[in-house]
Length: 391
Image 1: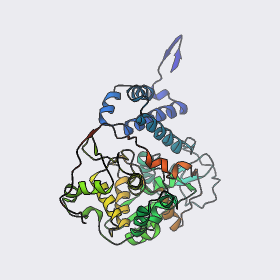
Image 2 (image 1 turned 120 degrees about the vertical axis):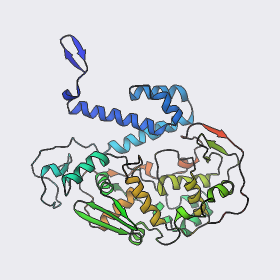
Image 3 (image 1 turned 90 degrees about the vertical axis):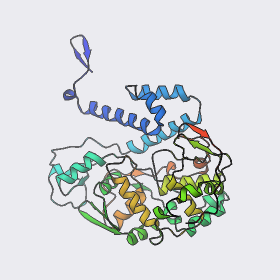
């Protein structure tokens, strides 16, 4: 707003200063986060509101006092905390001063650098690369890392799950931890990511990255041989075996989401932890962590039966899908990306770093919640499978 005489009128976009632009960006992020967290029916109800606070107030009126609101508040604040910890200064375009970074960058113009408040910068090989980064990936939400503590399954008495995670070769991947991540380098990695057959390519700070499935598997600590999960059990596997998988998960009262997908509401805690690992580490997503898609059912069954899956290939494909600008997904596997960059000798300690928090560590409270952020659900009789499942 601005004062014109004794009247206060809105500013035009041409009159916005840096602070105004920052406020607009924050409002837009808040609205987007709310839209991502709600189901289609709630989206319709709040889409008529103009500002984020109006939308939030309306949701509170509809769901005040429910687990859904409490969980949404936690997720909202967590996301805000994760994304704004970097506290980046406004990009200083046109600056030709010296960088305080000790890293040796190739000769570039100031327009091909992205400066940070600490004097360090991220450089690009071309204006095209820089433009793609700023247009699509700069501040794209990175999936908050999640870690299964080394003794969690054992301390909770989940001996079966502990054995399954080791036999499938997933344990190193789901339990690995880091103290810091560099969001800017993760964005740069995904900005230049492309897949050609069984090869993955990227470019970060002028360092070319080439990964075969085997090399990716070795870095990630994942099996790089075995079956493709997309072909697991054949075309009608989910249709024929959904009921059996739900029985194995210990679901006593099946509740389906409005989309028809089954939820894990009445499953035992061990099964809830398994789905938590799938939806937050193996295949991280924004919401719907208690809803099981057809692919989720395959992943769960494959883990429970220690099937020989090429997990490195699954991760490679999912990275490529998440990096597509045609999709609105979280950028996954922050720890893995950092490991890849370090394997290729990319300096990862320059620029703002996001430090580890307690939120990154999965605890019993993470998966024992009975609340669901999935929206309306309907009870349905559990369907049993005609016979044993098999890949």
